[in-house]
Length: 154
Image (cartoon, rainbow, N blue to C red):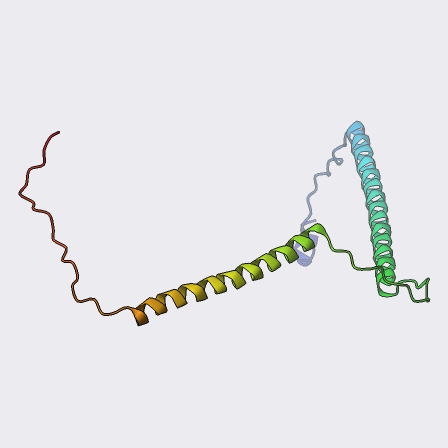
């Protein structure tokens, strides 16, 4: 034996001790792990199905909303024409607010007119006495009261 080891140096050295049998796994644990993995797989598949259903529902809703907007836009752009004969327009009816605004405008104009007449009369009165009045030569002199006088206590 020694001769074969020295002659062949390229061989790998192996142990002469027999290898122990591989460790045995607990079959109950293995079965439980497989059951858990199966449940997780089923849960993932159900979740994928629910997500797909939700996406389909959302897509249908978006499509419905887009169609509704298109119908509204079409109705606004091209309204249906039912009557082609000319329609007599009703006489214009003013609302209460419009009548009040017209009345306030009229009252303002009248007030401006009378104020103008009143101002004209005042200006004529002011100019007339100045032109006719003679120059005043004796103006009364105003004097301040004496400060040293003690007022009576009656």
